[in-house]
Image (tube, rainbow, N blue to C red; front, side):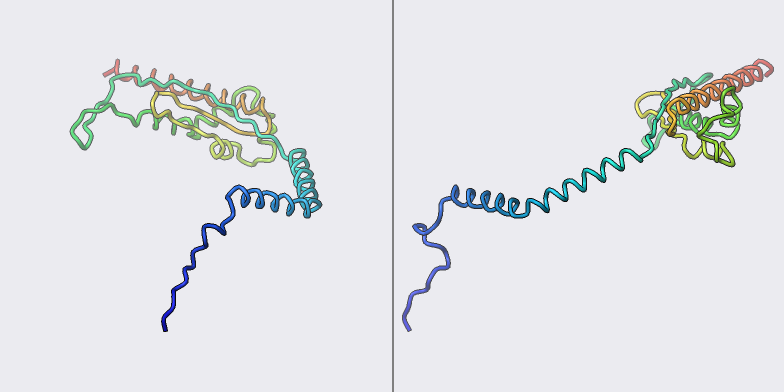
Length: 187
């Protein structure tokens, strides 16, 4: 049984050039699309019609953002971190962000002039709860700025709500500072 083992590799003289393979592939892809041209056209037309209907029926949402620079009044508190390095107390900004969402602040904002007839709260039982849920407050990572945002279908109301919340917060913050200063003077 003497014989040669045949190789499964193709003979180099029998291989087709790469350009022919690529050309054949692109021609076959084009031919496939051409044969199914009605399927491609109908699918594209249906997708465009559905997109147009969605855009006509979708309710636009507007976001209004106000930025507050918060500076800690009074003595700064410094603490040691785990490595023993003395760092500035950074919870102050996060505390102020939570105070913006406090019921007292939101109630004071909703009590300001022009807030009673807002369409945003037309079918809502408790507007403070809705405002707290949808109000977005983000503390800056590299600065001492708090971003207060609200999104609703009415652009004027979104701006008015955010400005009212910021005004109510600033009023309450200044009142707390005055009370703290008065207490320090008494001491």
